[in-house]
Length: 97
Image (cartoon, rainbow, N blue to C red; front, side):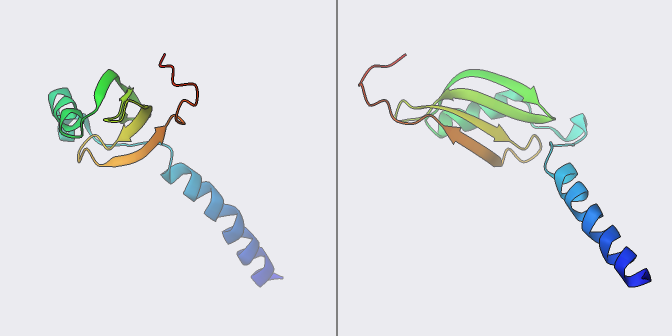
């Protein structure tokens, strides 16, 4: 019975800890790169920036990539590593918003 409870307890704890780990970038503000560094990174990648904001402790960039497609990128505030990027599907009509 004790083994069953231990295994059940571990199974319940793992998903909760995994969910907490992926919810944001929790870095002290003193370790953050400045906003100007985010702008430079975007320029170096050929991105046109519409907005830079902070969401869940991460930098978030809304803009267009070098190909003109809209995207949203999440960056680690200390390293400026791109953690996640989502791109809009290519426009089949040939029109741009």
